[in-house]
Amino acid sequence: MIDPAALWITMLGVGLGSYLMRFIFLGVIGDRPLPPWLSRHLRYTGVAILPALTAPLILWPAATDGTPDPARMSAALVTLVIGVWTRNVLIAILSGGITLYAMLALTGA
Image (tube, rainbow, N blue to C red; front, top):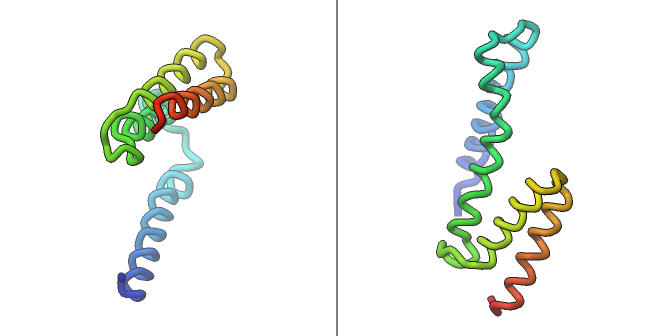
């Protein structure tokens, strides 16, 4: 167990750090226009974060102790193909979820 004092100090430190990072952008430079080169690069932040969050869960899932499995790979592929084909996020997510559960049922995992 972690010491309660150390836990609270860590939580407060992380919260303060998170607040200060946001305050730099919102409070200090929030009312000024950003340079065009920075705006152009920040436009791709969301597109870069989603694959960075999902790739480790697909390639090294904790459910299989870090070994890739066909169920998650096929669900990711179906989600990608349906998303590109239909341009509809909800249909892509639903089709990927259905594929994942169908593949898990077929493979017995």
